Image (cartoon, helix red, strand yellow):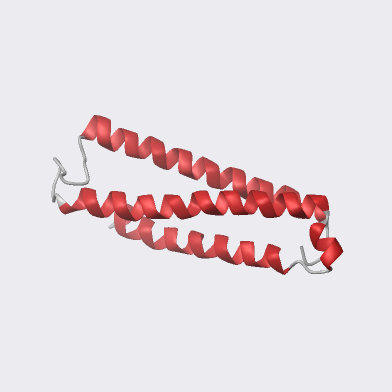
Length: 119
């Protein structure tokens, strides 16, 4: 974006959105497995503490919602870059803002992963 290279900017933003959508799909698969195969529910957990289900589904669901919003946002911004909207403005700050949002969502996942999957 800083170099005003539309083709590369659109390609990388689209790839990021695709990977984000893949992440949400994997999260849906994981939820299905936990609910259907393992019997974990927001109000109970047959494998341990009942609070796990409510904490896990609330935190990962809220994160998945933000990732989904980020995928939509990245797709919209990538389309606007492709159309040349930011060249007309002479300003690619919106691309930077989209990147900052995405990095924040990514950073939050590091902590969620550490607490739910590694601990």
